[in-house]
Length: 156
Image (cartoon, rainbow, N blue to C red; front, side, top):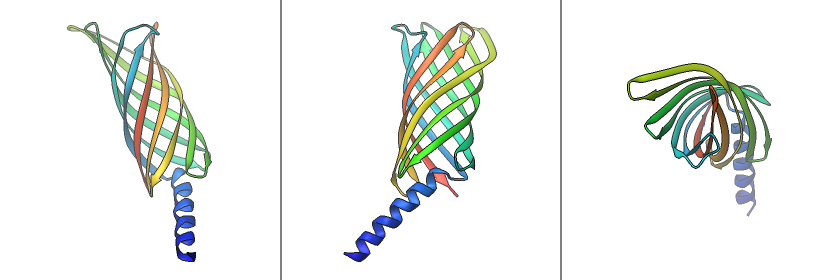
């Protein structure tokens, strides 16, 4: 019984320590809501990041927002990621800039705008966590809100 309790305590402590890992990478998928309308698409994303301090990190990633009415959009972002840990639960916010590109047929448009969001992840097994988040990306006069689930592997 003592060995079981000790093993559970060590797993819990390692999960909390991994939340502030030096390097992490993951992927997410979900639904993109284009400009708060009934137009939605499937969005996918990959991200990498680092925890520079116990309560803040930096993250970069790529988003594919899918296609609505022949218009497709994607972006690359860089964001600050403040966070707080509640045992194996990791709650965070993100805020930064993203360089986006839209395509409609052969016409393209691109620019740099703001992005922000909130999320949470739960460490289910060692360095692996699953989570959910909501992110908002501004593309000129259009907002794309993305609600997604994610999986992240925490290295180091």
